[in-house]
Image (cartoon, rainbow, N blue to C red; front, side):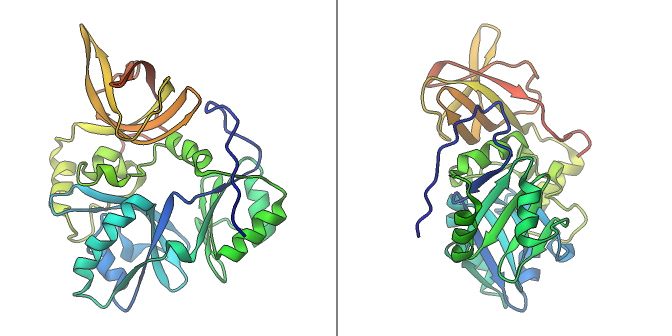
Length: 320
């Protein structure tokens, strides 16, 4: 059976249907196993993997030696292994970099994206739907006999064998939406789903990882730790991740350049991290100067008629 996906028809200003199933094929999984698998990853990434409970998940980032992110991810247990979930394009460049150093540890790293199907469950009826299938899922991570249920606020990510995912979708009586329905919700949450085209450009604080508890400032050394720690303790970070909403007449791409209106004209403002577009409606995350005004007006360099404005972030950068 091949999944048939539908295009979301609701406005980007709304939360969507009471129950929505989404095929998250834009995300992939790295599986880490072996005697030293977790300790190896702990020494490579910003997150405190050694303290990650079996019923929890966390954000994190893998950086190059200069502290620039190669990938951002969610880390969680999957069976007896550790899994890192990230955009597939990022996985393609990040996995080889991790493997370069894994040869010195008793750790095995593989691309497990083909072994699992990722489904998103959203809407006000998501909890009832998921618990009717899998029982109580009150923890951030619920292990299944095969797979896992990740709870993220009122949404769920199901990590299932393909046959189980197919059976669940077929028996649900619900349409299966494409990944953009899910991405729109994660963009509104200010999540840093970094694609490969912006690898090696931003330190984790420029994508708000500190506000999502994706950086431990008490763990030991990891790749790029000196830059990340110096930025935290001495300051100097001039950028942050913003959520922008508005309209554009042309197709908005990750490569599109943002410009901000200033006195006398416009100037380059930053880069797009993730974007969803329905007709002329646009919702995106972008790295901008961290003093960008709340009432700023932005456009696209290749669409001068586009109008984009910041939305409030659902977390505080000052507290972080």
